[in-house]
Length: 66
Image (cartoon, rainbow, N blue to C red):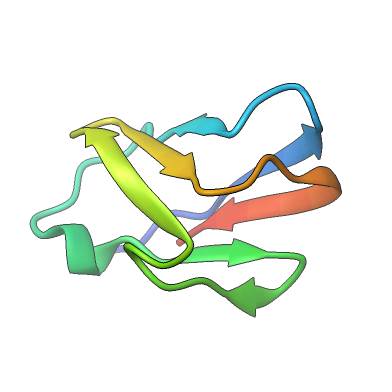
């Protein structure tokens, strides 16, 4: 399976980020905050199949989904 990288610059205004690419399992989506891999449930959850919700609202950060 090919993989996609999407980067968002966090501004402190939101903790919701869109997943604009198809995936098979939630475990296929990896979320990084400033280069640090985050853990599902302890750091973020899936609001639905196309949106993740970080448990804290990041400021001045880069959020990357791979």
